[in-house]
Image (tube, rainbow, N blue to C red):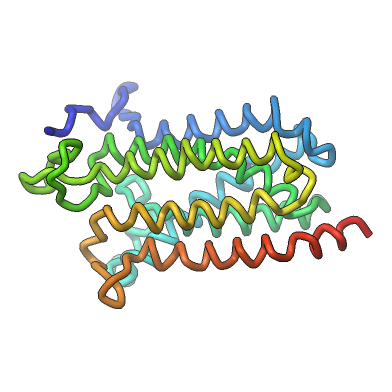
Length: 265
């Protein structure tokens, strides 16, 4: 199957080209914000709309700075040491989910300290809506014909431009489904239809576990970054970065009783 012809530029305004990748960030943030304000805060009595609006600025800054620095450090450190000015050129591409997640965690920690809010209450609601942004981001990766998968003989393989003449796994779409659609469904069902909504930190821990597992699985079908290849002969960088997520999620989940007991004191 040939790659569908999709212009990565959604539209132009004079000399300014608006790309689908940029719109994916905007759509993800806006839809997440609307979802939080309309639904989730009704279940978190200690979180108000003003908190979400104020936190948004912290999140955007943390996501962009963390995502960029994560890519620089985790995926191409040698290049950026030699070309430091390229670090600020985010328009040339190069963002890391794991780096963005670290940036968001730091931004939430700073906000919760400044506003005297519970850190895990905030991370819970952010984790509930994060799959929305991940979904749009992975679809944008597909439109850009980047982060494609390994060669495959299956009928759903796609011949991506600038990736040879053999069909590859559309791993961006695998991630869009697992990390976006399925993760959103799992977390929201657990939040709205179980007692987990009353257990601070539960959604955060499950997000770390499920995302880490899903990402580890998809990386099996995804072409590793050319400048890195496989680490320890078997693992991609994405897989190695997902392992601490899973471990942290399990550690947090197994300590929820203690955390919530201290919170109630």
